[in-house]
Image (cartoon, rainbow, N blue to C red):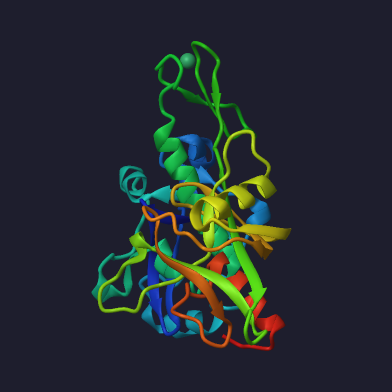
Length: 312
Ligand SMILES: [Zn+2]
């Protein structure tokens, strides 16, 4: 039986569970078997099978409250069945049966940013994929070269094709480097990490959030070059020993965050003031407020801390 996630922009239909909100998957009715043929209509996308998550919440109990606790207990052991994602508008237009959607019903749309801190990585990545593909579809309904309406490429290829000039528009990923820069404290020798507070992260009533230096890769630039350039631009220092660690898709709008480590080499911190409000090397034993678990920034900071036997 085919299942689908239901999205509304950057939010996904979820159910309230004892351990938080979980993405809900609606069952596609047997008589909508032709949905596979409709899979390339705008508002409905098939998802990569290779990313099938190990954990998800079944919606087979929709409308059956007695089963909800069973689902809650099984939420961490379910095997994925999701094969597609659709927009709420698409679901309504195609008469897909949806549960009652309201905070009080336990089913509501939750922003992806709030979910990614507690969802299993595989599921989080699949939601990320769904957000990006639906938005790519919506943004490529016309040829960007000659403005003709586009059509979907034939089976097996994810592309929007212009029937007039043959331009093919594929989903695009924007690479973005993010770097954890470390050095020993010049006085005490304790390991330190460079953290920066962005103007845009200013939130009232909370201490300022500090993150890592990050930025987009320019055309014609290697990833290592991008690390060196971004660090120089934002805080004016030089780094050495640049090494790749891991990556994370980030669907705002379609970034791939590439996480690096680097060592401080030379230079004094001078802020790029239109971007940063403050930046400094912090002792790992005395960090300011940092990004939540689930983000690649936090993963990199945690990795550095763990090497110093510090559990953040
Ligand atoms: Zn064209």
